Length: 158
Image (cartoon, rainbow, N blue to C red; front, side, top):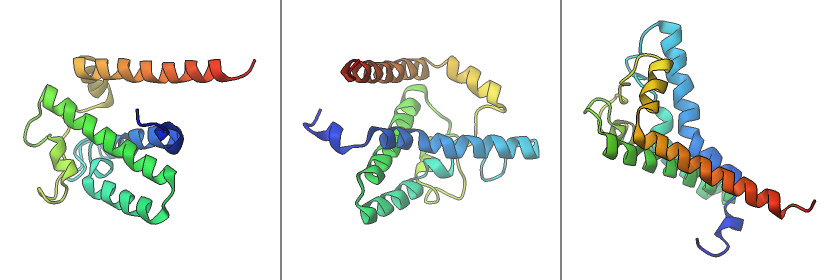
């Protein structure tokens, strides 16, 4: 790790940035699915606005204008999320209409976002639970969080 980076990057904002795309897109998709009973023509999956490069560029512009470490950490977290989504797709594959690239390069690749390969939250969870990439990612993420919590706990005076 780069010396001093841990103290310059606010961890809570980095974590928030890692979660941000899903915190925006999953409720949006499932809310529209629940309200309409079917997928929306534009928001046809759980990767849309929050997963778009356009949104990342807008956040980055705001971060550069604000010059706050928290804003930069939020952007770094979001970029990390998109990078991991790309990695997941490279490992597990995707069809042309469900590719993460449709979201990242929206609207350059057309006025559409990736279509979901599932029709409900339960089906989404089932498919995720069957993915070795997702399971290993969750285990690694959990180990990182547990290690950070343990180190913080040990560092606190009793």
